[in-house]
Amino acid sequence: MKTQFNLTTCACDLDRFSDQQALLRLMHGFDGVELMCFEDDARGIVPRERVIGLHMNCLTYWLDLWEGRLDACVQELGSMENVRRMYGGDTREALLAHYRRDLENAKKYGAEYVVFHVTDASIPETLRCRFHRTDAEVIDASCELLNLLFDGMTDGPALLLENLWEPGLTMTDPEMTARLLDGVRYANKGIMLDTGHLMHTQPTLQNQRQALSYIHTVLDRHGELCKAIRGVHLQQSITGRYMRKIAKNPPELAADVSSSGVLLTGGGSLLRGLASYIAGELHVDVAIAPDPLNCVARGTAISLSEGCYLTAGFRDATPKAWHKRLQNNHDPFAGE
Image (cartoon, rainbow, N blue to C red; front, side, top):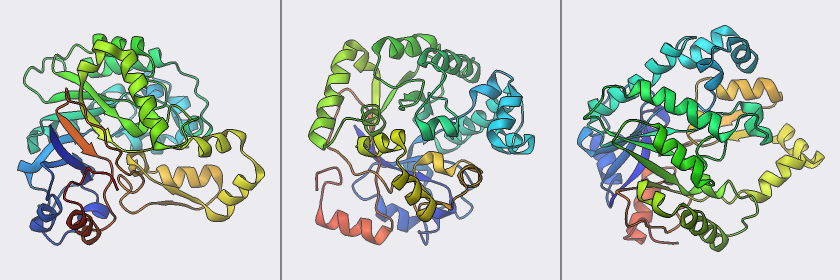
């Protein structure tokens, strides 16, 4: 199994490294990185030979555009200008072109696999945890998009389909997992199991022991389908208490958000215009966390013997801090 941590080409990630050697020193103990391309790596910080996987730019809200419902897109994003800025256009072809750029970058870096988020939800739906689309609807539309995107491709990278907690692939229903795997015609495919996203589907979890038990239970229900798991995004997300508060929306929580604002984390926080949109909708200050892809999660020791790739969903905020962690702990995947 190859091990890597996730990295983006955003300035907030790459500006921390003086040169490529600085990044290579950070990779000590890892086989390489799983890269997400937002900007050009003008300084050549990322060594191409150490890019193992490429995470496609995740658009968590895209199905309205795919279905030609531009009025809904404008209502969600505020204007047609914002729609075109988000997707690079206002047509299906614009959306396909968005993902073709990811495939071009995968070829450029020689990535062994690409990761695709199988999900769809608007920002208000995500904030309120109330969704109007079904898993089947999102899965069928994702299959249609991916079949067009990979049509005729025979020697491309592995396509690894990642689970989330919003409608789509959640890994909570084996029938839906099978529906997705059967619906994608591209032969070189599998699942990228995100442990934190899976934990997020069960808001009653209170500690790591319960989380691990839940993951094992879900995988046991999948039986032979587990053979499709070819990689793991290793992270922890025990957020049940927070989610229950959000659902109830008590006055003290609203007051906290109003006074303290919102700090965005995760890959979705890097979507163009997301912070300003949420700020406009909620009328509060919204900021993006430093190192947003890695600042939340702490690794929980899980290994899948059938998998090929293990991506650590955490990294300290600075190379210096990460070096200290490595010096104190030879195995970066070991527990605290």
